[in-house]
Image: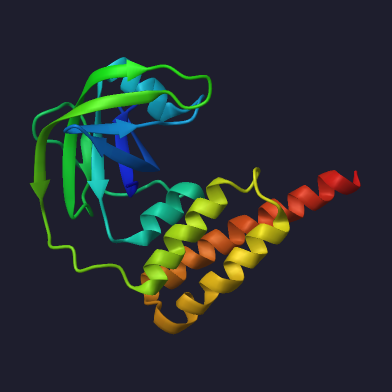
Length: 191
């Protein structure tokens, strides 16, 4: 099972890198498999640690994919780093082992501490739709425009029926990103 979360890692200059990512758990370890190249990959290799942030504010997922990464952070408890202040819970991790790969290396990380900050009340359909749209945005270069439009047509139903203010904001950010990508792609095809 893949869990959609936000990973925070420390950049070389001491700032915090925030990235949406799908993780898995196996034999008591958390598996993070970032694409090459990526800041998450470099940061885990250098610092030997990462933080899993479990959130329900889908604006953070959408924001990370649309250039909005200025989210409030607080220091972690037992490893050097930061977590999202909005995290419902967070899991501090230390690197146990590494498996290299040309496309997506795998980090196997051992939990150091897990802390719950607030209860998870569940996702509504609009929140799930924003997550799915965020995944589409992260793969725009790999998917056909037709496939993206087909997926969005279905996801829009959930937005129209169940979205609150945060979901509407996140959705619009993603739609703007898709529109910009498609316009730039059309210009390069006609040039």
